[in-house]
Length: 307
Image (spheres, rainbow, N blue to C red):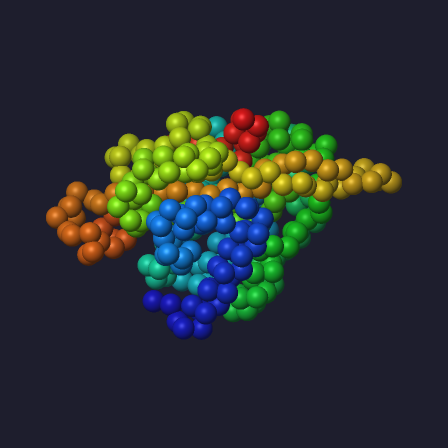
């Protein structure tokens, strides 16, 4: 149970995240506009946010050990661990304090598993963080937490450093520039009106409207139990400004920012008898799936954004 004051603070944090994310990722409003135009929803408030996701660096004073303190403070609970061997990532999902809040999926790059050059580049920036910044944050001040999640934690990288990381770990490159920016939010497809409430139907709708979808591992990613089905747009490109070499002007490049995900959580077998108007989160497939998430990560990869 979450107290009223903590709920107000959490609302402030989540609203701040979604506001800035929506400004940075035009596809958010484009998806909402398409749904409104088709009569799938009457307002953006009709959309349930299945989960939001963040990326972090596994280095001293940062990473999940630091980041999770924010949402644990608001009553979120850490659940299953996921290991992405090839991408060198560890992730957890966090269950919300109340069912109307989104789940959180947070991942961390295992920096020590990278090459000496990549580690050197990352630590050149992150070593300036000499204590856990969350420990100095008033977590009961929603505006302060919102500002923290959108402020730089280290210096802007050079384009050369960004590109060097990109060659080895596109995840590392994304985080070194984007930091804690919201990586994506997720529309709960199963709660939409009939005709659009399966991932197959909703993907068809998106494709008919011209949205570019992540094709890694297939447009629709399906868990082995078939009960978690996901898809996502390809990350939007932004005009990024990079630090120039000493005495040189800034460099600019088009790089991946964030994207929108779509998820269908099917009703568990033991609850199939329930009528649709009685179904809640507890009756549907919970958690995440490593195989699905592995391919969703690639929404920001050049193999997708460069198509």
